[in-house]
Image (cartoon, rainbow, N blue to C red; front, side, top):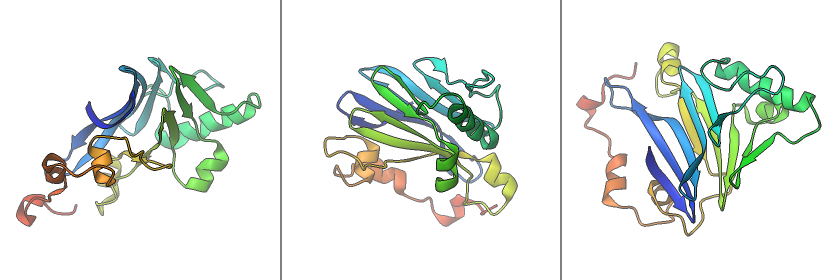
Length: 194
């Protein structure tokens, strides 16, 4: 995992995968650590979400299925979790561990946002993590094959933040290493848009 953003005692890290033919890279996993301990892990494995909180899988409250590759696919798992939380008790769909809060989506939020997502709050960081298809491909098969995770900082990035995401957001001066990540290979090396 590569540290992407650090603020106070909170670190957001990510892991990528790539298309060997084109060199494109996407995020396959994100983790949030607090005080050096990994608290939240969110990953996709063949389009299926794997959500861990404090080392334990997040479970569907109705039938106990885990939000892992053993459970359902991404498109039908999140609404099921949301429905289960809405249908169980009048609890907020929030989980917490080690001072890190995870908000699972309600069905209303899924319909409002138009994609599956969850919010993670830790210290001064609020990050929305959601799966999406690889829209840069015209082929639906490749869009699905390269489904990945994206992040959105719904409350921005704090001024004390450091790391690649802080540099990309303009909070910190961009380093040569981060600038190098943004350079496109020459056209001949990029490969076709499949």
